[in-house]
Image 1: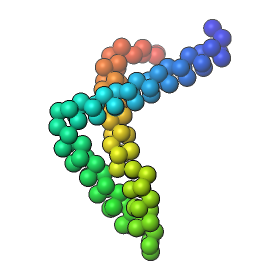
Image 2: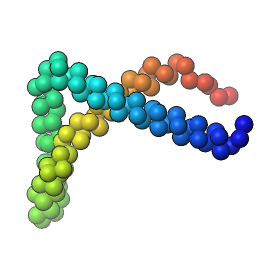
Image 3: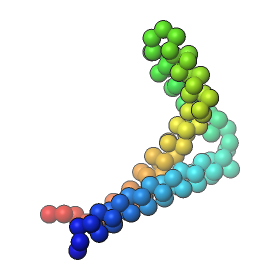
Length: 104
């Protein structure tokens, strides 16, 4: 097989894995929203508390400025999506792990 074709195949596989993980994360978020929307609010509040803790370590007035910027850009919701992606990737890898080829 051509080396470039192998690289394209690996890149396509990784891209497909990331795409499925993103769609899976949205599916997890929608399922949680239908089941109990207060869980999403609680998770977003915990993410906001995490942001406050981390920005509190910054010197001088940087903490409040960074916290304000992160709130404007929706960092607590972005963290929620990242958490969903991690859950989806772990689920996909746990299903696919027994079928992986072992190299000698």
